[in-house]
Length: 306
Image (tube, rainbow, N blue to C red; front, side, top):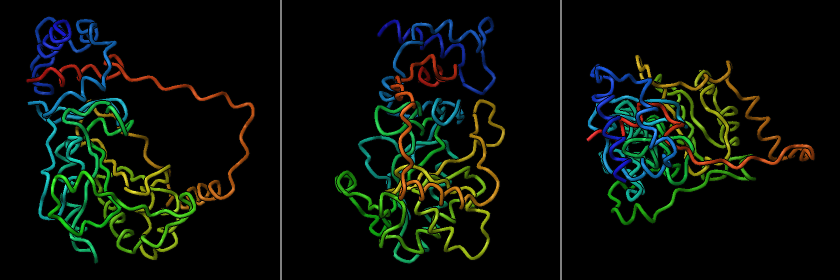
């Protein structure tokens, strides 16, 4: 533990005030993996999962959505006029300030929909981002948020209630279709989210994307950002673009041109008529846990900042 803290202290000296232009005179960011070699094999999820508050640094996302961290994260207040953060024991209601603003803006739009008073907000990021001990491969740089499909009707839920209440599934036939819980309000909520220029893409189960494709009669440009993906029938996953001017943040490749409806229908067709397994396909390789050496060098500074 002493060696780890010492390495983190060195990292903090090297990158003190991350993004504010202050560096040790004889050590560069390129040297950081060398001076913090003791950290390179440390489990990143254990280190980031142990942090309870954000770092006292200027807000910045470092790395990619599935391999990075966030400096200067803010917390979404547990309860607001048009939202409640859920599963508070996880302490995952943190994100880049741009994500906090987006969630609050979307919650106000949700409150104007019939049957909704606001949003139930699921996992965002940990206080300093990074890999999580469970549940997500992404959500690491403070720009991802899960929004529950359950309409936020009661915004006075206690902490205990928020640990025990569950969202509701929208899918039928393993995700090929929506079920009777799906409403036009869900369509309009996802449309509002996808129409926000801060949003890069939204993940939802294939049947929902096809249903929205079938129902939309106006501008269809926003459908491009709605991406079919496994699961995502109890919530939809919003991913923001890297903030403007962010030099250490890596955007995902933009979605292909067009509305993506044919692609979503292909997903549905594969659910209904699965292709036969390939007998020559190699067995999947087990995923290993990320270690600090897998993350951007700045993430050591984010952990060390006090």
